[in-house]
Length: 368
Image (cartoon, rainbow, N blue to C red; front, side, top):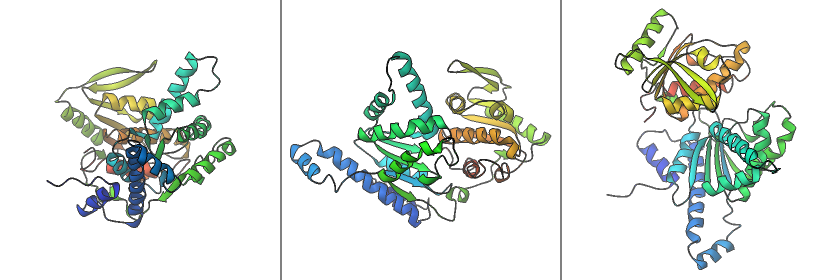
């Protein structure tokens, strides 16, 4: 039996050959750049085994200088898949693939713990960067985006310190670097990081007129419109079918020191109203906790939202991101189709990613 191709580009060509993708130049460019990065990382790791190889590597240091990779472009164009091909192909190095929301939540928690133990320390970023670099030689960040001043202020120093420790980073984002944290509070303090990011990354626009996730769409019974009594009954039937006819009962989860109430749960299935999840001040930590406890979430009463409900729309985006990243199944009863849920208002452009993900979450291949 012949070996499966190991290079990022070879794996991409195999997927195209199998009909899982339609070949397009931007995806091939991304796969090519990532393939070159993969080869350089693996060659650099192999070179450490012998003195002669190390001397050769030093002599070619400038030629083989490693740059991070920043993949950006509209939703559903294959950025995450290209990064995952790279991550899965990479051998011989410690590596980590993580959603950027989850990573920054972890960073804040680790900084807090570090400061509570070392009250006299004025710098918690440097030791944290050293720890992260020791854990992972390569970091792959999905959905790289900055939404608040706290992340913005930490990120510049953390990125620089990780780079100095020799950690290589691959990122996907819907935005080019110049649009990161656009309109954010004290954004001028964030601009030096944008300049550093542009200097230290190969930036690849991944774009194509067709959203490959939409092409895979089918019409299963996981999204019901409109939300009326008939839909509510269907959601009840879904819960019953998934739990073997059990009614379910409330459950309390702990997120840090806070309680998160699940209105109805049985086994790995939970049922919520939209307000339970997005009408209250919940965030990434809460949604990630749900993905740890449940394989399927049923969400009733998702409304059509406008500018006056931007906070709920933002939480809904974060919720879908968490469910998608952990491949959690979702059944939804809503007042409108995904593309009509939040057509205008602050963050409506970013909501297009949520729409695309919700469509993919209805496909046969989701979660496989």
